[in-house]
Image (cartoon, rainbow, N blue to C red):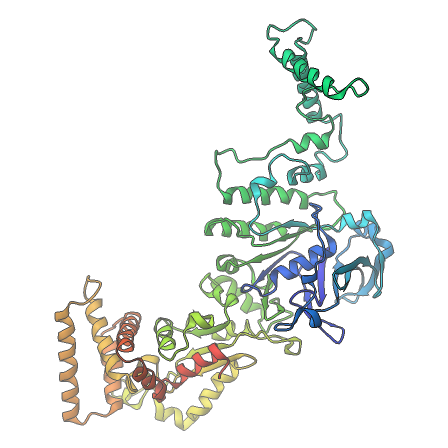
Length: 636
């Protein structure tokens, strides 16, 4: 069995509306990874489950006043909810598992039109001033009835808290987590005096007690009688303390002779001295897996793990998540985990993702997005940690090349829409991957809620100017395309494949970003960047000397004087900069973008208002400005 559905009414971030839950979320039987920015509801989801079914470690869990929903900006006294409800629905029962819950089970048809068991467990709580009442019941109807203690114990989850103290959990103490795990394991469960460890400790106790009595195993006196004197001295004190009617006596033992107490004295530690927090965390997770992998256990095998990456470096995170994904395959173990790690996000299969955003949760499986099977396979191959940033972003800009990737943050700063402030991530997806990546953010059933992350996709129009005919008369150029289909029709065809919900495509007006800049108000700045990039590309030096900078300035002045004499059109200038210099000389577009970004930063320091006005008024860059506005403010 596994946790299939979670519904929440008025619990923390999640409100309710006319009896509709504030959150309705489905889980997969295996791995589920909750990702999202801080305060997006990940912990509230985990706690809602934990409060309803409790944990294997028998933590003291109490509903508190702050658990009742309070609308943002409202006052405590008048607007905090007075009732909350959490429903956990379990499915996938085997007959052996179902027999433990028969009086609370319901029946329903599944996707294959066959009847299957389900178990609905719900927590209801009410508050009256500072007094809180709550019940946990189960049953197919709304009211349900109390679960027996045995049934409740079979539903407990394994829980690993964030920033867990793994060393403490594995250390010997009363009711230690290690002892709880071992007591529940088949190696110890139901065994007592016949267990090898019991016999070992019993023998050790007897040897210890003989030492403090001062005798060996045959009853003969030991040469060392210091232990006997020590114990006798302690017991003399006790006799005086207890008085005539309350005789007190003590004895030394290694552990009380029952298996539980013996296991509470055990310490599990790494064999290396002074192991770090990361290694201790891995040891803790490995030990908890013992509890989940019990073959004979008929209860819930669910682990709730917050911040799975705690104390782990990147490679350890990746090894761990790769192992866990394989471990849950074909098993009855279910994992519900939270993470802030983009490295983990890049390794988990997209269908196992749940994005938490704006007090909602969005599963990313095929039943919920517009992604098709091929998209999932593609994204599994190419969704690296850089692209995985998009799951934690407040806005996303997708670009198809290094130039846009390098230039956009600078342009955004100039027009006072800094990406860091607005939480925008720029993702370089490559030439043809827009459609696949954009589908990540489109919901199959938008009526159930949209993923409120504005996504701007920026692409080149790739319409070559008619001047290109001089280089290659056989290439279709702007005039040729106009005969078959207007430029606007061509743009509409591109947009129709991408646009929708919060995703919007922004297309350059002409050829490429570099050519569009060359046509606009930043023509001279681009030319300077191209010439800088040419010299950098042919030099081992990191920067340019003042002499080379002077040579570039002189070359630009002479070029513009020559253009003025020839009455060169703006389009001819742009074509020369992009085709004759950039393409023909094979100057790196990435280096050009870096140089142009530096030039713009220099101009910004001198007069930011003039540069901002220049950018905003440039018709060739309106698509870039509009894309930034969409990603930062939803198009405002």
